[in-house]
Image 1 (cartoon, chains in turn brown, cyan):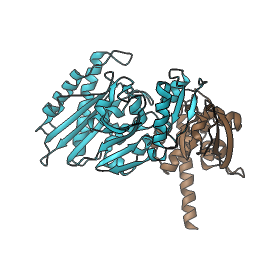
Image 2 (image 1 turned 60 degrees about the vertical axis):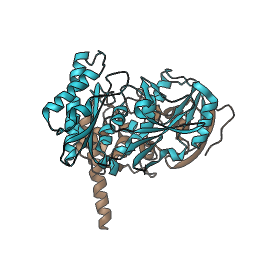
Image 3 (image 1 turned 90 degrees about the horizontal axis):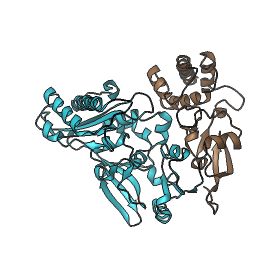
Image 4 (image 1 turned 180 degrees about the horizontal axis):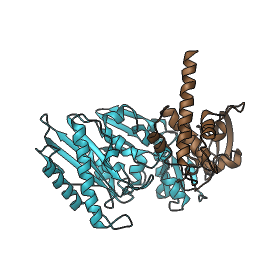
Length: 173
Length: 298
């Protein structure tokens, strides 16, 4: 997948970000969150605590949530990343989760929102219709300092219900 | 936060990884899920010269069943034990992962990485002690097998040589009637347990114990077994209150906790007794076919 550069402090990596393939050289000590923000301009992955606690940097790696502050960019070599910027369709149509957060007032200041959305997406891939306890457990690694958890839980449930009815409509046609 | 400089290596086979480790020596570290190592490197607590990432070694992501054991490769993530048939057949594995950090960390972190890190507060060590896991350790000269109790030497100290990698954990699949449970007290998501207890019971057809193992976490510099477990429970029903009390007392005596902001030594010994009795009840109820969630015991 990649070629080692003799000094081994830089590497050339192939990586898929939001469906597009890239070939980039990266300093091996660069954390994934800074790589996404600086090299790709994808500033949706936020640097909150930078100590694996707050989850504001959450992205998906091969469809599973991870904290981009607790990973080296080189560890993502050969893998597929999804950031919050990859959530809406190319034509701008919002993802049901984004609509859910909008409709159910799932954000106040919005700083934690990208991480919340990505954690919720990981949850809904595994459990399409989660109960409130499952939603709360799924976002346990995401901190909202506005403490608006109640509406975040509602927003995720809203999205789950919308995605379920989409599936049902799809079945009917 | 900025990491200090290091060289990064991405071998594609276990033998290549071991060869690199053998060449690099003691200032090299092996990277699996990185959920402890990367934070330690960010804090400059760990300062490896060389980092050997196991991510590209396909065989290490395998979770398979071989010769009556569940083989957990070095890159198998915690989340593998959260759902599915394995979690249903050995619910103690689900008890364990359900309390490990948060979803994102469980998606990245690995059982082998946790064991090799040997944090005294880690959840896997007491569980693997109670269910009698063995570990495959691979070095330049080949592979050897170690019992989990021999692998964990002390806090952050294992039986791994400088040029060896923990490549696989082997969990024996129960052949007779056996049940187990793990209960940990954690104040918040992401905390290490204040104390934890794993209990395994082996039963005869009449429902009496023929053997038992009790292991404790977070209450000494390493996870430890309570030696008297089998003697106390042999011939007894696991529901027998008096035996459960004696088991709890033996565990409270066996542990060696220190006093901190979570509680005094006396509090922690008392907590250990309670957790052991709860883990025993969890195992006992499972032994008669009940589906019980460990969360209801903390």
